[in-house]
Length: 130
Image 1: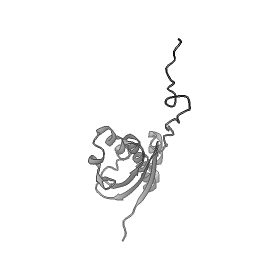
Image 2 (image 1 turned 135 degrees about the horizontal axis):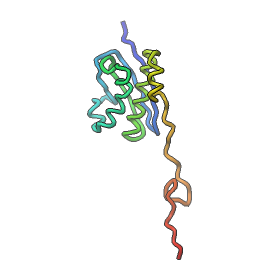
Image 3 (image 1 turned 90 degrees about the vertical axis):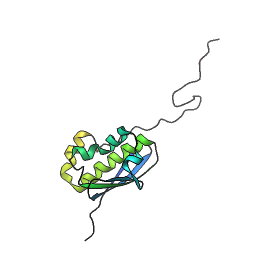
Image 4 (image 1 turned 135 degrees about the vertical axis):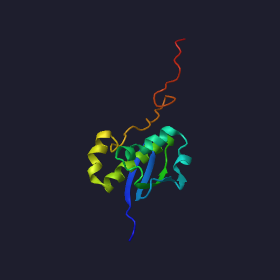
């Protein structure tokens, strides 16, 4: 009998994460690297684990994830959304709980584009009166 897989896609800024949940003992593997190796920062590790801790699924599933694009924090947010979506596909009863905590909402904030005549999106050249 084949193992059951639950898939979820998460995005944050320009990061995209494809998350797969497999029944297991709680291992998290990101881009074929261990969880603590990929996220040495404790804050990003907590962000990734939030949906699992909220639903008490911490030791029930192995999380296998492929993530690319964006920075470290964006990737952590993308993985969090992917885990939340795959938990809903595994158990639809968890949807209200995850929705209430805000883990199923995609964060729409993106980097603002640079405008001509400015240094960055909003930073203007220094003004000189004389």
